[in-house]
Image (cartoon, rainbow, N blue to C red; front, side, top):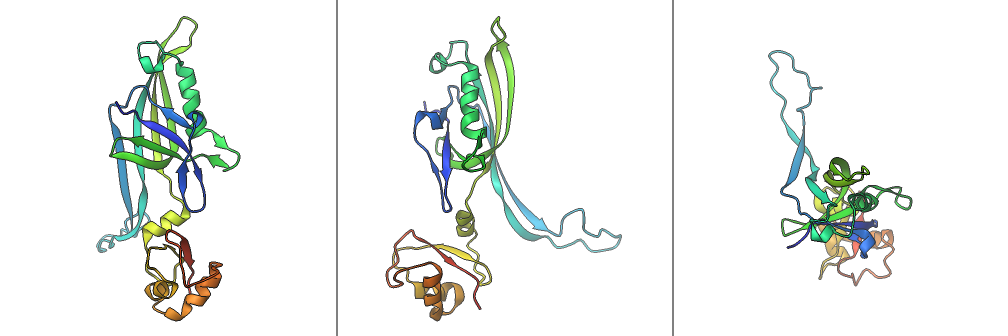
Length: 228
């Protein structure tokens, strides 16, 4: 049976990548019985700050932004020995490993690391940050050590600035664009698409420190700043 995994990631300017090695991967011994995914959008003109004088027409709701996706689920941890996959580890050790991967502060990143949650096709490669971790202990040995616990976890989608820009795909020339080069793309073609002006390709080549504007490497990220 496929087990849910939570993997520590390293974050660069352009992407979030899962790390390898047992110390960076938490594998559940008991899969969650359910999980929740939450999507949201924000609209302007609908907040409490709006003037709600009697007789005034309702404000027009205008799309403002998409909210990051959220995922939550609960995990049961067992240290009684009845679960074969957990026979060699205690509940405290399982909690400590998950905390080190998803919760502990990273001195290099100056924030907790991003993680990747994987479980089946519907929850595959979900890159996120842990926003809440709640632990309920329910069984103890004679010395008080926990033998069973339930962890409630909540995650919020993690994206780099480059990924946000790519997903937004905003077409305004007044905004900075980040474009992933595709096979056949040229700087004049991209300038025509964004600025409606082919002649700006030399400025974009200089802005991105390109040695040559004639040959672009697919999957390269190029920045197109606001231009007039």
